[in-house]
Image 1: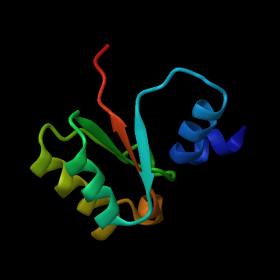
Image 2: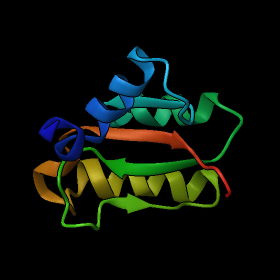
Image 3: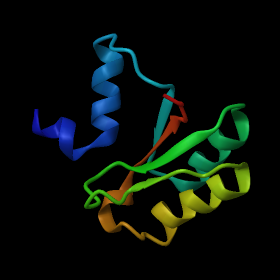
Image 4: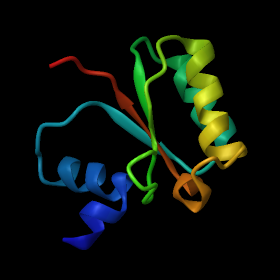
Length: 95
């Protein structure tokens, strides 16, 4: 149960394995791969540092340029430290 709290990637994979409804997502440990994925999809995403980031590891970009910058912020600049070793790109949903 602790892993559900510690890792957003683990939580999303858990939900998928158990057929629990969740937004579309993909996880990455490589910034270039994450950016390539974002360029290949047609929906807005939320960028999440997978690890514990003191409640600060979620970014809400509104366009492709901001999304690419958010990936850099998390994975390259490492603004959230080791929490950004893995990133979850999750479909932005309203409601």
